[in-house]
Image (cartoon, rainbow, N blue to C red; front, top):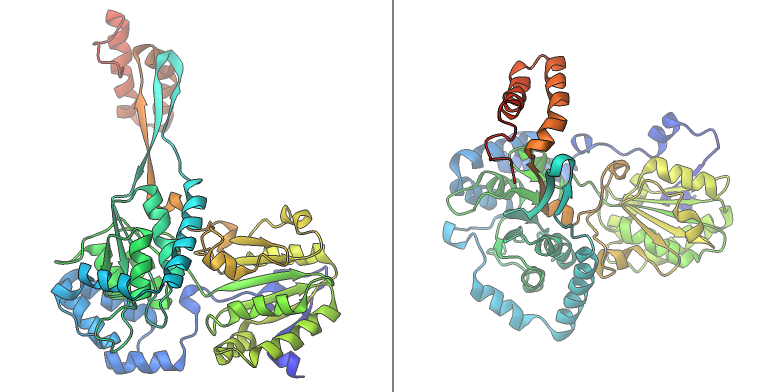
Length: 469
């Protein structure tokens, strides 16, 4: 009975369908996430009335767009109890220097190891501009350029997430972004102090400026610009429901990477998997958040119960055991599948953020995993290695969006533009088809813009000498 209370045990059948999925495994969308009572109480205390998170975000974003710095400072005080001025909105160079003096040699080495690994992997993602020759000596080009300015949301309110600092900033630096601004919420009543280890990681990762504010007010400031905070072109990074709703609200004025939900993991394990490894990895995600999801898919009922017993043992020594237990009670699932093929099929339907293949031949099954943010192969590829130092990015699509989204990477910090250089000979060959399509669409001016050039070429044979060469 205790084990059933820890995770819901389900027996999956071959005839599982979408209704079964919705009933047992589908998680709510961003706008549908239930608000914890503590958050509801905080909203009422801060804003003086009951409001949904979406209403809170709408008020904050609209206010910051109108009042700039004054609104950012007001909400940072009302929400975080941190008193700032326009002069203290950004971390100073002196604070950065002090951070370098405080960080230990071991901490410095760990952060630099992560940065080196992440940079190495993401440098392989860099795109190159290219030319192609086309008809009549014409040229087409794809030009790759970094975005001019980006904002990276880096959680710092509850814990100094140095790994997220690395994951957000290093791909931007590799892409060549010249103005990387990190947004970090100071812990409540901290006086605006941000953990020195986080400051160190941000600077080492390539951040140029660190905004001492977070939440919806920081997202709005970066999207609209204020007297002190410059407007950026794109906002990336994880965060709670208020940051994600704010990113959704400002999308279109700026770009965003994705709308990130709570963390999730699916472990596919066979009877040969080590129960202590499986249990540890499920708990590594459950400790994140009460809304995090940890799911075990296995054809072995014996392994399932060994894992549940091991989870109980490991929970007894975890600092965040209460959070992990709540997460498991809400979203923990242990699914007995007919075989590994059925487990993989179910995993693809879930399309999770993380997938671990703890099976005898993980490479055999890799090609069958079609929808996942990141896939970890074998007993030693534990998900936290991917979070920290493997080199791949840990900012991944969640809540089923791995069906169409990708991990954060260099592509999120570049833009592609097209260059077209058509010669006279090229226009002679391509122009008639363009005129015909213009006529088909009823866009006479489109067709006429091509016709006038074709007529000129027909009249003097070589155009006016300005042919895109």
